[in-house]
Length: 149
Image 1: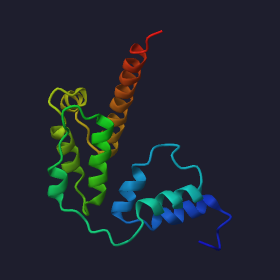
Image 2: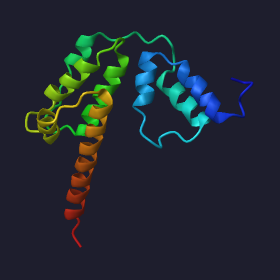
Image 3: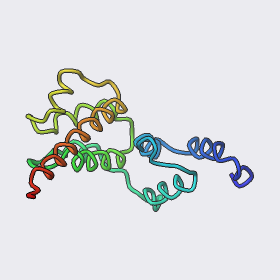
Image 4: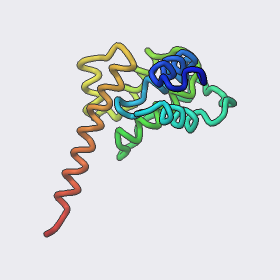
């Protein structure tokens, strides 16, 4: 990579081709515009995978997660995807179904996923992002409503 250090696009492609399945899931989960340079990419990767000694978690770790009353979707989904990234193996179908059933029964996202199921982790993450934005907007509106002039 040192030979091509001036060609950032090529460095990014070479870097991606070196990732295994767990690291690739991490990379795929990065939001658009999250990384602006190869330097930022290597810094984010380094902070996520500080050592290569991580022991993969068993699938039951993911299956045991559930959203708690009063927990925000952002908090829960962050915790869920963190655990998902710790599991070694291809459990995309399991991830999709367990995320849905682990949401509170009255949560709008759970109802949406029941009415219109997703078929990939990427679709699930996109739907989660949509509902996180709605949740954030609702929280901001509540915060503004409490301001007394």
